[in-house]
Length: 369
Ligand SMILES: *Cc1c(COP(=O)(O)O)cnc(C)c1O
Image 1: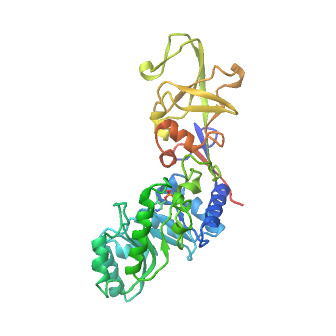
Image 2: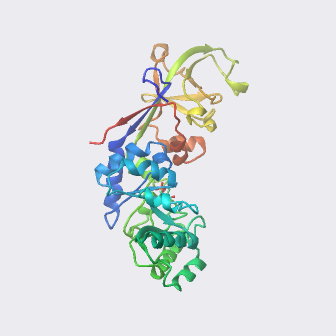
Image 3: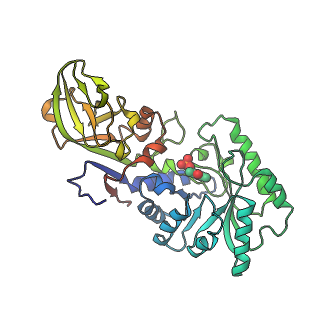
């Protein structure tokens, strides 16, 4: 959708320099000194192409997407020495398309390994792949019984160059959770029966579990985009996103009058209400009804009533009338009011706040230096 900046109801600014700084910080923490970037779901809603281009310039060479289609979209925009890995593996029959597009699949099952091996055989090439083992999350990857069978089959990986052995942690954001150690042990055991290859385990939170979890390549996503990697601890990541929405009308409502759908808020006293041009169609979550907060500078302004499709209503009584006029921009996500703070209010996680960010925003990218 093309919207010029004046007509847009809300502005989203994405700080590519902050994303690169976050990547450098995470990379510096990783024992091997090497980190990929997870740019699935359009880089968590922030734009896979601009984000990956900026991170490539910062030195990143491994990019993980979820779907084959995401990889096909991203691959041609990056230089040849960038590696784009498709985490969901390949639907049967999609192998030639994956190869033709220069993508590296994650092989998640014996079936996927066999199909990739057959393609290697029929094309006479050695084909790169990441092999994922399920170390306990029960979502994707080779099961223990598949591993046992594969370890008996000397030809299983013929024609396949295993670039990395991979797994994913279920509870990395809970450092004390015993599942972390268990998954680590299972991952190490799986590596011993698979072809010798570098390993990748840690997502953002996993990096903060310590060097045992780092292996050869870290795989952060959320922390690159400013989400706190260890909930409840100070967030070392830089804020990346700023969302500002425009006041489109103001009015005074009298004590006892309702505001918005179902009158879910009734003014306790005479109140000044600003209608702001953002709603759940923009990914401003409806669960923020009566709970969200908008900001003008350091002044917090409570959202009152329901979040509608295209608008929210904010009680601006705390400020003098001249301060809030049609055209005034209020901060909805900002350094003083982070993605995580919004998520907590909405009863969700920063990941969902980011990936919900809508298409109607006027987007600007602050360039990486
Ligand atoms: C999404 C994802 C990541 C990145 O996780 P974050 O928590 O966002 O850092 C890493 N690995 C896999 C397999 C994923 O699905």
